[in-house]
Image 1 (cartoon, each protein chain N blue to C red):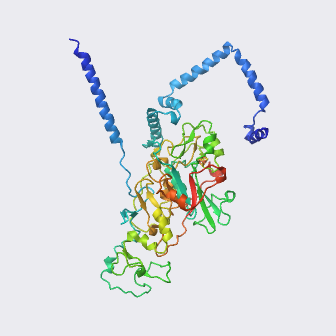
Image 2: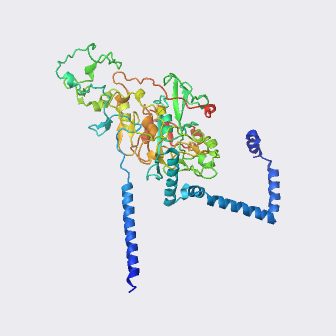
Image 3: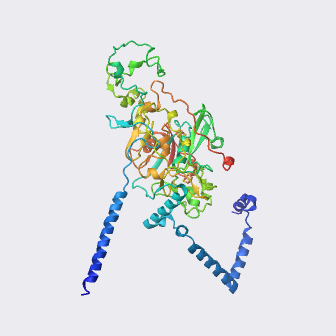
Length: 355
Length: 193
Ligand code: SF4
Ligand code: SF4
């Protein structure tokens, strides 16, 4: 016990995290308690002034700020509360981007448990998924946030995260003797990130998607420390999406040979996706954590996630584990499947396979 | 004399509620978004598709520009069944797919040029070319049918399109060519430059 404590204390940077030894803390709080028993007039007036000032400040700010201040946890919101939330966010995004956002609060579909599978024998490490994901989900472009990271590793070593390289930049991929392993949120059935959140701002939905309430997140980053897959990312700066134009559909090709090289290059598409879900790809504020949501705004409408649609080699598979005819179900039943960091008992919904 | 007034008030109230309810219901109906259709989408710039005999929806096969239907040129020509290297036409095609043992007419049908043929002689449409591939690559075809090899676009629940083998593998030279990767993400120290 005491050893653990020391360990935490050591970690504090610049002395900020250093805590007083246990005994001192208790002694101090006892003194404080005896002071409180006799509240004198000055104390009372001071407290009254603070409360009044707070009330006045709240009363004098505009309706939207007041509503945001009293906003409840997503779980406790009535339909009316959600409608108000949508309207408030729509107005804010309209002001920030000049665009009309569609914000869904659609709940899980009945009889659906999502699963994801990725073919390690197919992936060529082209990072189309990584950039398409950032565009689809309105991830900040400056400072840059990517929910998917593609790891390059040596074939002869197998999966070895200590040797993995995510900043590789050869002219062409795949490089001989290397293989590629994209990693994002595994939507664990036993999610450490959810367990450590001190305010329940992140939770597992009934369909298996692990979501974050960005308005409830206090930015403590405990979940980032707890996640063994590095799936969570923090908004260290005010998130920016450089060009405030809505993403448009690409024109259909004329029928020329669709080789992988001819696929659109997502990093060149600079736009805002106005088709959003409140627990997914709505633009995030400064100081909150974000991560992959299995494209909740698409998948709850029955569509494939954006990474599945962009992958030029078809390495990505998505579906409903409860459906006997499902692709992912077929993979789990017929293919060699690899569960990343299985020994941690996180029980991922994301599987790697060798197709 | 003063009796009818409250009744009038009630009537008006009822009317307001009724109109309000109808308006609300109409609003809900009008709000219903149109169903997503399977055209080329933002991530899916593939040409419009067709549905095969088996009921599988595939995008248009990736013909080179203006080359199909083949009968446009071939219908007036005599068939030369002799195995040879083509030097006048189709010189851009380099056969690198068991070329020692095969040539054009092993897959392309000589008499009806707009069709392919299986080893049995049975004719297949270009949109069903996977049957031709499956003669040798049976395991891959089985996985493709299950949606495990190859690529599908559209909906995990609902309409989806299957890319044909030839959308990713050039049938004349099927090995997947290396491609240029998207840029590396920024390293932590570059984030606030
Ligand atoms: S991968 Fe990380 S963020 Fe995702 S559910 Fe598991 S622990 Fe949480
Ligand atoms: S888009 Fe497909 S092939 Fe490219 S890195 Fe992602 S999973 Fe791998």
